[in-house]
Image 1 (cartoon, rainbow, N blue to C red):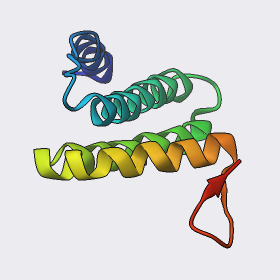
Image 2: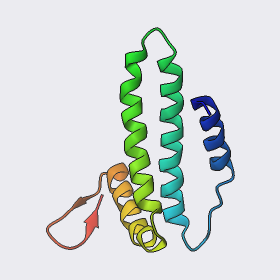
Image 3: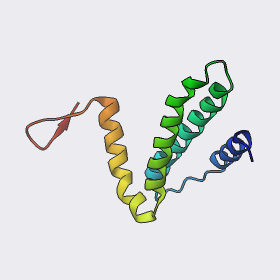
Length: 108
């Protein structure tokens, strides 16, 4: 089975991904990681068949790192539940630019 067939298979799995209310946040994080892997591998596939195949390296690295993170997150239900709030808070801090003050409160 070639890369194109594997991409189709991964795309079908992403389309069939089911979110559960109890684990919604961790499911969203897992789905985002899987989508990043899918898009990076798709870019590798297209770039490697172009006139500049060496440019596929950076996307291959992104896909590999995203797959590693997804595997760690999906390893067990306990890990997923523990990581869901950390992933969500980390993402929010990055997007909003939240910084920690001298006290225990967080502010934008």
